[in-house]
Image (cartoon, rainbow, N blue to C red; front, side):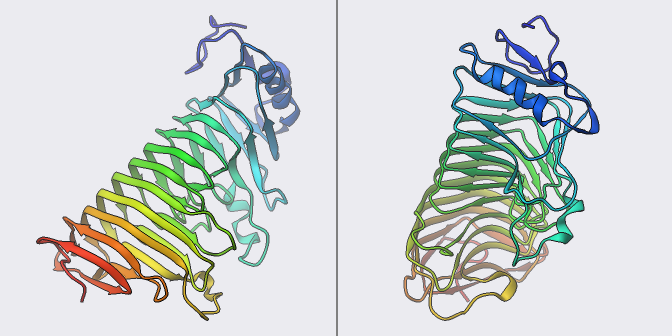
Length: 377
């Protein structure tokens, strides 16, 4: 089948492979792994590349891996619903793409992680649930227009990748769903996320160790825990984080706004060259946070300081309403105080009425000009 087939948003290349022609059945119950893999293998081994086309309907997939490298450009066009199995799963991912250069995932369809069937089955002391989509060792990937709903764990997990672009992606899970981060980035560089809507039970976007040259713009975040760098310093030999720009985003009714967080105590690493700019917040509990005593689930020893050095961070034109009186919290490490923290053009009001304050410890920071808050209490 070629380009004369009516396929929504399929790039016009020589080969379009409809998974139903390989035995996939859209009843939401049939295991379609083998059909999808047969289609994928033909595409991946073709010098011309191809499109794996998923028509309307609901296709059940168990844990599945789409391996590269591939010989030509590959397209994964989702117009129906991909549905994960219910309940607890032993795998670290639901769908894994790895070692592929030049993958495009698009379409008007969605990924249903069936999270409500599993959220109560996991706790902080057990193995993590599977991420809905994991990218490992990918380069030059584009993910656009699709939706991800109710992941069991992270919606998208990016690991050891270079050049991944998310555009116009919609990510949703209830505000009380556990660890449903929208997009988690680790040990990756040249990542772009823009024009997307993310509503989750955890960080809308989380940026882990080893991340560099990360650009986030025009993202609507909330509910959730905001846009975060970290947590950092949990493990030995974590790589640094640098070159992060978050701009022109809107954050609504989240636990945090823009945040950097590290464990204490922790091994040494660095976070530097970070910009949060032109951020609108609406009833956000903690609009601006540096937390170097991060301790979820009260599981920390509290014996010692974080050794994560945070420097050259700008918070510029962050405006809107705070759900708490303290709009800015800079809680830095006593051993390695924050350096070069700049705050400009802040306008944070408490519930839209009173003024907010800032609390600061172990931070070398500068408030520029008339703003709210304008100094540390």
